Length: 288
Image 1 (cartoon, helix red, strand yellow):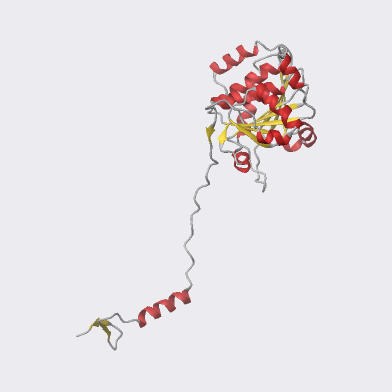
Image 2: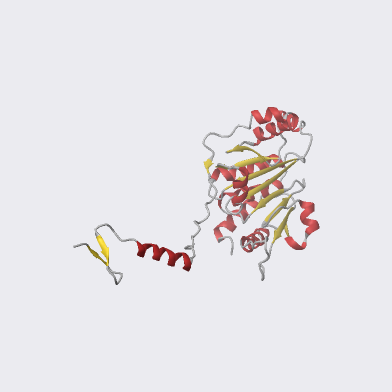
């Protein structure tokens, strides 16, 4: 079982708040019998599939559809799935939330809470929030990199999901850094949680939903201003991160050239140390 009995009981209790249908689309890669160059195995898919099957069994409101990633090209393209394992969460508002990796720790907690948010009737946003949401003019994608061990990553992931559920112009992707470290390394991430907006790194730390939506409005209307004034993060919410270092490569000893080795021995034999002499038989002995 992917979930302990105590975890299932807690999740079932949270799912009691669900007020409408919740659809989960899980994108999977089965273990390969033959290695394919450039397409590595995804061992975490096995755990992720088991996890989502158990989660779907905890509420009658949840439906789960499993797609084999490499056999569902049209579906993958339509849903904009970039890697596996991935679950796409859709509630009544049909505002997609994507979680990449086999969720664990604080990211699992955030995902469960995001599911409940997506399937419950949201309270009306404040007048100020409505005004900010009204300024959004084009689709914007949020991407959050976080660690399962970091409570701030869970809060940041939930903040990105909560903002997405406020507007059809937003999408949220949450990546577990334990499985997608190459994204952080490629993008120059130095601390987690890391927030990307339209594939650009803007914040390392927790950004609250209101500040996040407000910044997206600025980003869409005045990118130059947004570049100079990134969204504020909660003090002390960032944890330093470095990409995992590859193991040191073992150096093989240089091949020995037998001709060069023989020449070296010949040169050594031709040298007579100071204070020594070579006998007619080739022996080196002290001078007397």
